[in-house]
Structures are given as C-alpha cells and as structure tokens.
Image (cartoon, rainbow, N blue to C red; front, side):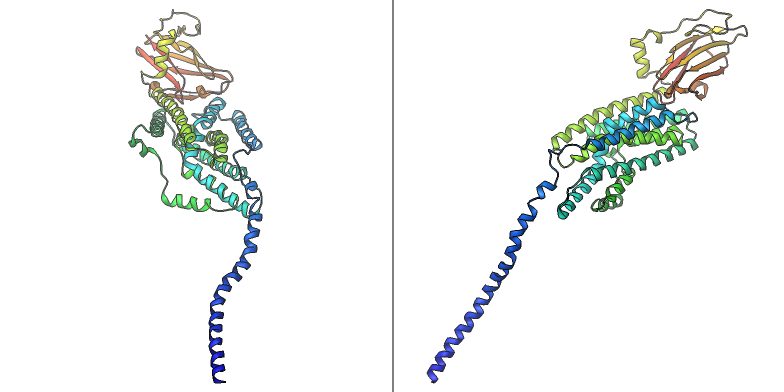
Length: 444
C-alpha cells in the first residue's frame, strides 16, 4: 500500500505539473479563438473603404465652381451699380475687373502656398471621419466653408481699410509711396519664388508661432465649422499679393470701395484655390513647382506695373508711359504753339486765347485715356481746363495735377472746370489716381 500510494503520488505530481504547463498554453489558444472571429469580420467591414475615399478620377464639382463664379459676377455688377463718387481713388467697374483677374491669375497660387496646408489638413480629417462613420466624404463642403468665411472676412477687412484711408486723407505723394512699396514687395516676392538669392526669403511674412499653433489646432477638428473658422482667420496670414490689394483698399479712401476691392480679389482667387484645394493631396511636387514659376512671372509683371504707377504719381520724367509714347506715338513729341483765336474754345489738342486773355483747353476723359494726350499752351497767361466725362467709370475719373496741387474726382457724366494761373514754360503732368493713365500740358 505504501508503495502504491507513493507511486500514485509520484504520478499525481507530474499530472499537476502537466496541468500547470498546459494551462498557459491553452489560454492564448482560447484568446486566439475569441479574437479570430473579429479578425475575420474586420476585412469585410473595411472593404468598402476605398469606395468612400476620394480618388484622382473623381470629377470636379462644377456646381460649386459655378456658385463661386456667380458670386464674382454679382460683386462686379454691384460695383457697377453702387454710387461711389465720393471716393478719391475709386477705380470703378473696369479696374475691379483687373483686381478680379489679379486674384484669378496670381492670388490663388500665392495664397494657396501660404494657406493651403490648413485647408488640406481639415479635408484629410473629414475623410477619416467619413471612413469611421461609413459615409461618403464630400471634399467640396469644407472648401466652400473655408472660401465663404474667407470672403466675409476680407470684405469686412477691406471696408475697414477703406474707411481708415478716408480718415488719413491720402495725398498723391503718400499714395505713390504706398504703391511703390507694394511694387517693391511684389518684386522681392517674385524673386523669392524664382530662388534668385537666399536674401529674398526674408520678404516672406511668417505669422507668430502662437497664431499658427492656434490655427493648426482647429484644423484637426472634425466639425464643418473648423474650415470656416480657418478661412476667416486667414487675414492673419496674408500672402504678398493680398498685401498689395490691402494697400489698394486703403488708397481707395472709401468703405464701399475698399470692401469691393478685397471682395473682388478673394473671389478671383477662389476658383483656382478651390481646384488646388480639391486636389491638394493629389498634386505632385513637379506640378506644384511649375505653378510657382508661373506665379512668380505674373507677380513680376504686376510689380513692374505698380512701380511704374508710382513713378507716374511722382511726376517722374522716365516711366513706361513716357518711353512708350516717345518710341511709338508721335503725339508725345513737343506740341506746336497754337494760333491765337477769339473763339471761346479751340479745337482739341490746342490752346486758344479768349477775349479776356484766358486760354481754354478741353480734355475728354474716357475709361482708359485722356484725349488729347499732349496739349500746348502759352506761358504767362491764365489757363482754363475743361474736363469732359461721358459715362466714364475708370480710374481716369480721379485725376491728379501734382505740380498744381489739384486732385479732383470727376462725375460719371459732366463737365468740370479748373482755373489755373499763368505758368512758366515747362510741362504740367496729370495722371489718374492709380498712376495708370497720364497726359501732359506743354507750356511754351
């Protein structure tokens, strides 16, 4: 009995040991049996995911683009209908179209380079949310929310800048300096995009780190208001072209004009910004680099135009206008002294002496020119200038005689008379308030 008990005890001990050795092996096997059904179900649940996410072969939502274009045309029509005669530098419908084209060609590219990362992060977050909820992601919604809030923010900003410009009583000299600085800034921006020299990197405006941290935090939000909030706060991270438009809004000297300028610019940037934002994760680095080159060339041209406008406002003898007129237009050659006439007004392009010895000249003001461009008058005699407008809506309505200290905003249709005292021999330059169109009166 003792041997049998001993033997049973000896056999029982290994059995207990075997049980202890088997149990750990059985637990992972049991856990594996519990996990395996889930592992088999997950592929079937995640299989539809590729159908949820966006692909490069997705079509562009033309309805959304049509809405943006419609808003742009509506804003331009509003600018044409609203009365803005009180603005000292209002350019009107024609120049608003130029602002719109500026945003369409260069503003979208430059703004996308600065602000596109935040929008792309917001779009990616919404795609992840759509995968989790097994719904279809709509990339156009955050982009439209972003651009809509951005439009509202910049219209308000433009109105504020225009109102501040009216309080500052912008003189032609101050306006010329602002235009010159904007042109030089755009020139440096273009050189930076072309990588001509590392020094031009310093012209890139970097917002404070706290601002960028705040914006990046909200870009991770899954709600639709996140891209809208980011779009509104893009006024804190403007691109180079935006700064030039803000300077233009200040120089407009009108709340309505400033709001319309910034609104037209943002609407101009919207179509290209929309397309680039829609395909933000699909554009290759090569294509992005090509876009930057195109933007640099366009900004370079705008910089030259801005610098030339500033030189015109400063009565510089060397401008693109004077060089072009001298080379290709005979009307810029020295004018011939007119014959003395007893008629109240002589033919266009000449000065006449009335019975009271006051010379009278007439200048027709069109949307894009002053006719005639060069008028000859006599020195030592008073001068009466009659400015005639007929449904004129361009920046030519705001005319500046810098040497005479005269700045006038002409009515859309009407006659404006300027009495000028006798002048010494020389040249009286006059130019529109934006420095785009000019003419001269030669005193002989």
